[in-house]
Structures are given as structure tokens and as C-alpha cells.
Image (cartoon, rainbow, N blue to C red; front, side, top):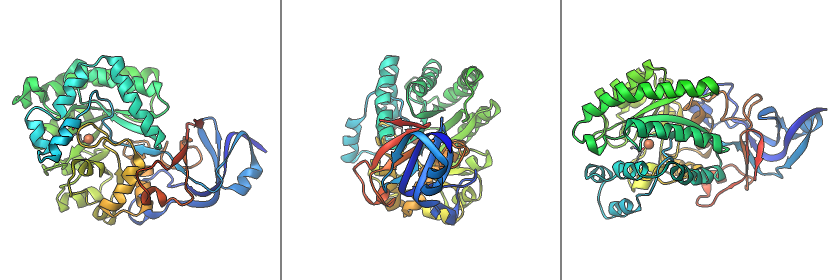
Length: 425
Ligand code: NIG
Ligand code: FE
């Protein structure tokens, strides 16, 4: 008999999503590595055995045994695109949009991202973290065990650094693992309205070096498995292709990994730029031209679809994810949680929506929200599947059939969350 700390036995359907370190593409996205009557043995923060219950039960004894009683057990969700660190809300703008105003019109009139920037800048640090922590609690309760979090609601050097530090502080305080992204180029701040080039200059010359220095200091004392990312909102009314390239080139030079918001509304060539620059992910991809989508599918850049955003905006066009999968691309899904376009803390809802809006099968949507999402954060070897050696981040659902994750919506199917081997109550 071997000792484990935690044993989970008799899952009706255990979804391992095993992949030996690679993301899943094409038909492999339908393979969940489903084990009937499955079990997981955990020691410390890691998985030491996974497979059918019978042999695991014979080989391991543990202080804590969790009877899954026929429930679904699967890896915790990885949400690879969020703007969860913000103050205030934009419920008023939501109502304006219902009456016909567009997202970009509101932004051009000084609302949108700028209004959250105003609220975030003027909120004391502790209060800002507390508001955001409450949202992290909702995410975790809905099964998100790892999330990316972007800066981007301060838009000046001191403020962006404060947000980056805030993400690192929240990561320390909260059971969820948080992966920070510097998104200084989220919008042009009102002080520099019509002086986008000056702001780009600030991002490149002042903010990025300071961000890289903060990260070097942080990781010297506490090494982290994921890189620091730099992201840009490449869009008409935000940053054009040349400006996006300048920012990302500097970021890459300073050792940051890359992400880009591309083709959310209009196509500017950002998807090709992401592929050319070896970005880890290209996100949104709603209006991406066919040619660029196919080039993306053939690359190792992960395509991150955010179906909650067109849904949140009441739009009818979604990422052509079916086309991307069929062309062999790596697809992940994320919430895009933010106060403007998508105030959604639930990955199960994103999965349900992905199946309906983008014609994914439930299995494809689950792979997109776990393993492939982990690859969108450079964490494919650490989380996203239930394999020996990986971090023990997993969920027990209230249901016996994994398809209920997509089939039902609006209630939370997650019953139990295990994070780094700890049972969370
Ligand atoms: O991904 N498009 C840019 N960023 C967010 C929206 C942020 C906001 O409106 O506050 C997005 O949709
Ligand atoms: Fe976003």
C-alpha cells in the first residue's frame, strides 16, 4: 500500500483530457480520455495516480477519501482571458446599448474603458482588491482554478504598475492561480486623446521596462511557472497594426510572452501579426478574414474565442471556431470577464454558449476550457488535464453525464473544487 493525501473514488465519468504535454487539435479535441468508475490519487499538490478505481483503491490509502458516487470528475477550468481587476460597473452603458448605442460609439464619447479607468484610478487599493476578490470567489465556485488577469484600467505608468502588483497580491491571497498580463495598451487615456503616438511611446519607453523590472524582482524571490504576458487591443479606435507591433516587439525584447486582442470588431491584420510574432495566443477573432484564420490554424498560436463578448453585446457574429478546429487549429475559450462587454464569471456558461454559438460539441468545448486554455497561458505542462505529475486542480460536478455542462445552463453544476490538492469548502 502507498500513502496518498487525498483519494477520489468512483467517478461515474472521469475526464482525464490526457495529452502528454501537447494541446489538442482537430479530431483530438473530441477525445476526453474518459474513464468509467475512475479515481485520482493526490499527494501534496500533485496527482500521483489516475485511472480506474479498482487498482488505485488497492494500491493507495489516504487520510481523506472522497466518494464521487457516480459524479463527473474533470480538470479545473482555466480561464485564459479576463479583465477581472477593475472598480465600479457599467450597468448604465449596458442599458444605453440596449437602446441602440454601439460599444465603440460609447468609447468614442469618453465612456467605455475610460469610465472604468476613472473608477479604478480613484478607488483605494484595498477596496479595488476586495471588489475583485469577490469576483474571483464566484469564478472559483464555478470551477475556474487558474485565470489570466490583465491590467489596463489605469493607463499611466504608476497606475498600471499598481494593477500589476494588485494581481500578484490577489494571487497570494486567493486559492486560484492568477497569471498576470500587462495591457497598458488597452485604450488611449483621456489626457492623451488624439495623441495615440505619444501614449504608445510611453508604453514602449517607460511602462514596459518598469513592468519587466517589477517582474524580474518578483520572480527572483518566487519563481512562477507561467511567463508575464503583454497584450494590446489592436482595433480601430484603439491601437493600429504598426503601433501594436511596436509595443509587442519591445515586450518580446524584454522577455515578455505575447497575446493580442484581434478582430473583435474590425480586422486590422492583427491575427497575421500574432502568428508572425509567435504570440502564445490571439484572442477574439470575430471578424478575422478566412486567409488569416487558416494561417492561425497552421501555427502554434492558440486561438482564444470569447463567445460571452458578442453575447454580452447582443451581437450575432461569433468566432468561426468550427472552421478553425476543422482546419487543425488549437482552440481555447475564455470568459473575457470585464465590466463593459461581458460581466460573466462562469466558465460553465461559456461552455454552454460555445456549443450553441460556435457549434462546438460538449467535448470540444470542455477541452477548449481546460487543456487548450492552459496552453494559452504557457501552462500546458502544469494544469488543464488529470495526468500524473500535474497539479491536482479538479472538479466534482453534481451530474453524472459531462454533456450536462453544455446542455444545462444558468445553474452552477460544480459541487466540489479541489485546488492544489486541497479540498475547498
Ligand atoms: O476584451 N476590447 C477590449 N477589452 C475588453 C473590453 C473591456 C471593457 O470594455 O472594459 C474586451 O472586450
Ligand atoms: Fe478582453
